[in-house]
Image (cartoon, rainbow, N blue to C red; front, side):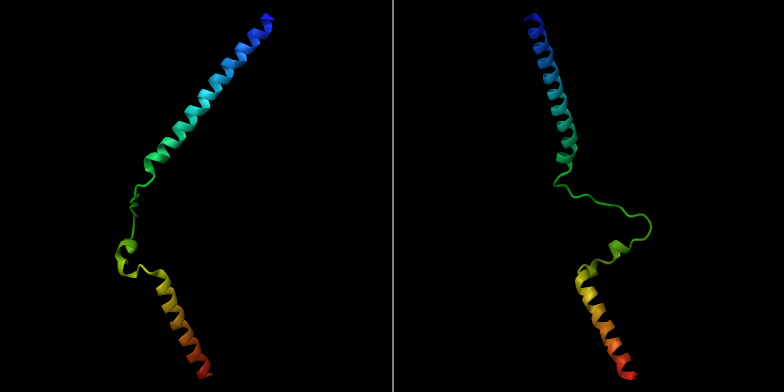
Length: 82
C-alpha cells in the first residue's frame, strides 16, 4: 500500500511539472506573436528604390491588363501585315 501511495505521489508531481513546463513554453512562444500582431512592419530595401518610386503604379492588375491589350494589338497588326 505504501508503494502505491509513493508511486501515485511521484506520478502526480511529474504530471504537474510537465504541465507547468508545457504551459510556460506555450506562453513564451506566443508572447512574441501577440506583441507583433496588428503592427505594421516597415521593410527597408537595400539597393534600388524602385518600390518607393512607383507609387502611381499601385494597381498592378490594371498595368497587366494595359500591357496585354498592347500586346494583343501588336499581334493583330503583325498578323494583318503577313
